[in-house]
Image (tube, rainbow, N blue to C red):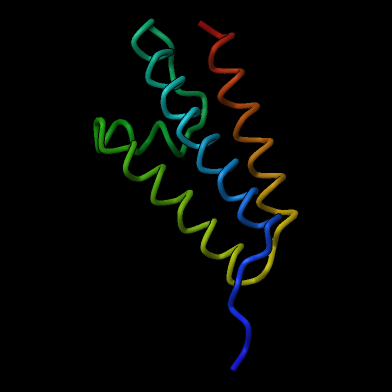
Length: 96
């Protein structure tokens, strides 16, 4: 039976990715409340059709990516996505 335990690096990466994803949602919501506009056309499309349901879509998409990365052992991918998502959250605080 194969060993299914995650590495410490993967766990840390997943925690960072989860926190970055939540930060992205929070800062996006704050930016929108201040009159900002979503720059990502895919997310904007979901916002227009789902209202605040876009948040569920965004978090489910992040979860699906995380599951895919875990299943394939893509530790570096999780860290890169964490960094990019954190940068987006930071950028959200600067544009409005």
